Length: 249
Ligand code: GLN
Image 1: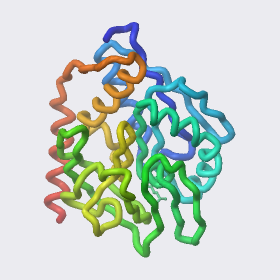
Image 2: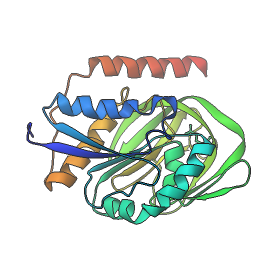
Image 3: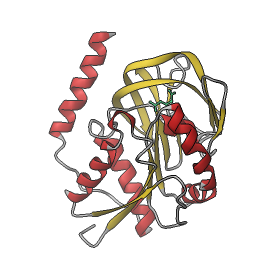
Image 4: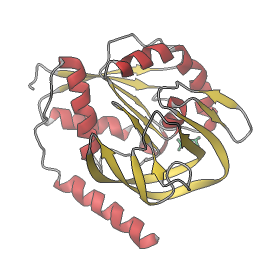
């Protein structure tokens, strides 16, 4: 991989879906690629925009308020076939919080409105009676590799997985998908959904690199082994978040 290589990122609704600085995940993608001399091209999709088929290697949708999710959901459905085709072709996709809810089949909000989702992840969500808030630590498993992943959650939605996707991880501390199952997030092939804000990737570079490797493999159709980086600062941030969560509980 060199300067001639580029990842094409499609950032879905950055103006509306950017709660808890979820946009910071984009900065991580950019910087981890730059450190390896690989470029990043970003296409931002807003309301009314049509996603061009086949043109992106990595898709990202952050979290949002129910009100903004309502606006986005209607628009997103118009792009569902393109996003599903991209997932089938192995493009990487990351959906955070409000994002994972819209990547599933449906989200029933607190006022009883049912928002149709993309159906890319086999899951459904409905609002519960309380918000699930706080530090969240999980043991995530991706392609047979397990790592502790840390972040922060704040959601009213309770997410239930269907048989066609696995949880991203098991809750170590915090609530996760529904506060009961011990499941956190969802994964199906190269599509990951999670409730982890923070933003997620600065403290969890392992996950960032998995997504970037999938994106590069989608673009260049060959197996990619990314050069390891010095993640000392990231590891410290990870450990501090992990210690803080354990102290509180
Ligand atoms: N509105 C959704 C919920 O409360 C998602 C919130 C979020 O993205 N933090 O469940």
